[in-house]
Length: 334
Image (tube, rainbow, N blue to C red; front, side):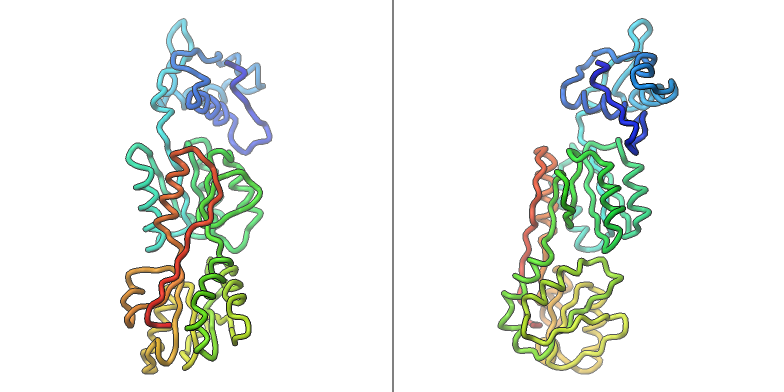
């Protein structure tokens, strides 16, 4: 079975891990069967020009995982088929908030108890993002990655391309050029269609202010979608870090919950009632937005649906690229 092994000297995956991965994948696919004998350590060394330590490390790791065993006169052979076939999923989120918690819960429930899931967070730190992916290579059957950055495009793509495409699923944002699976938002299209559906309510305001700052990782494509949907109206992209002073007859669009809180607090201090003196449209629904001043109008992707779609894709082995559903919930404060 030496022909079923492969070692790529140019790969960033350690050579011992490549040997280990090839054997695990062979067992998972049925190409390598239980009790089948493995090549000797000397055979693998000679075939790929590897040091003995490298091959020993690979075989020891497989033995610790319960995939192989050794016996005097028999050498190394496959023993633990069940240990290989169970799915073990690596999940890398950007951060933990109410929306991602809903997404994560939906994903876990959809995968079921038979799938082992390990979840990590990069917190928008590119070094942490790269480190966690590098550390995870070869240890999981599938990889779910949420690459939410507004910069570092080259480094993001380089990192995710170290993961075999057939095992990779991107979440929330799409990166083109690969055959991996994804369930993602179309931020520009969703914003344009969502705000066009609210055009009647929006037109009663003299000005529109989009609260957006470059330290927030929400894609600017959402702002572009708003601009396209409200052509002919007075629109300003406003950085809330300089301070928020609520103005009458102005519609405020918030992409971040902390900015929404500051906005409502300032309006309250001025004695302004949202829905009367000024309007609010917020991104991403939450229980809080159902009750603030009788309810805030939201444009929201369906995070529960995103998680369930991804779980279904992983369980089926399919790799599609799906735009996630979004919805507009019209409430009092528009």
